[in-house]
Length: 414
Image (cartoon, rainbow, N blue to C red; front, side):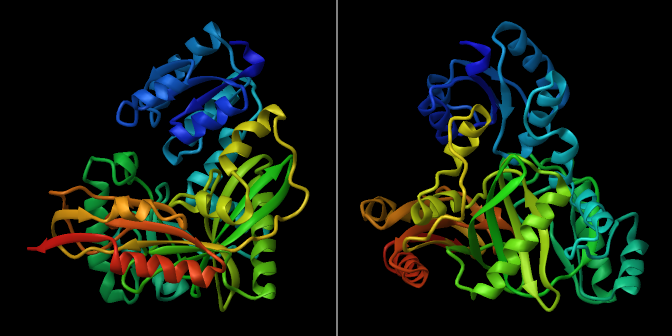
């Protein structure tokens, strides 16, 4: 390994490791023990095990790797490892998103403060939760409904809508239970609720914007349409490209670029979630990584852009800049299966689904024997089917038909 041709990957999936090797890079992998697989070790040139949510655990591993082998940059595409990866680059003066910028994506209250300072159109009222009384005070100041959620989490974990003052007691108890649990939530237990942000509720349908930044120039690759449901904040589907008119799409793209400039992101992928309602486009949150839920696969199917390939190659000058937004070819969608409360007793049809050429992915998100319940957040979904079609409408229809007719997940109610 030579330092100038070596990347330190933190929490990388097999796909990200494969992208690095396809670029001809040497790879040092820092992986959490709960995420490690033998296939990862086979792809990496060196593998170190550490809790990548803990800087005190990662720093000595990174220092040892830098002293022994050297590396040109550190990179992560998983939420819980983004902060420590930025700290590694700062520690050694390497290129990559700084810790200060990364925190604006990870901490939703810091993000709201930065947007307000910048006078961005996406600035909305926000406060940190102090006690139960502060919920009443926020409602009195900004009106109802409003949202209370963790400042540093993902996958719709712990998001509550406060519709009236009568909801305050219920939401306060739920938030206190989350903060007092002492254990991580979702995503392998890597998120722990500490601070909570209260912010104005934004109406309208939700979209995400998949972008890649090249030296401060933000190229929007895709505007993705999200499917949600009343009663919870879990995402039940994504469609690429979004089925919206050009006027709304242009405003969403403009709001995304304004946000990325305000946050100071200059290089790499981003996944920005936006609602478009009576206020116009408003940024709900953003992440300096590729979108989850198979969105990257949908984008690749429709636009031919492998965002993981770009993310690993760009710091080394191994990919060319995208000069313009790519053209969509067809459509793609993913749809998720909701649960009822009970026990999973059988899962069938995945093998049949995976033989179909239109199917991008068919995955169970639970196992036989698991106790499941009605959806509250993204971690409560049973399965997904992702597929392509000549249009977004056709892709959505196919996903729904395959879930209805081919995928069979039996849950015995309690």
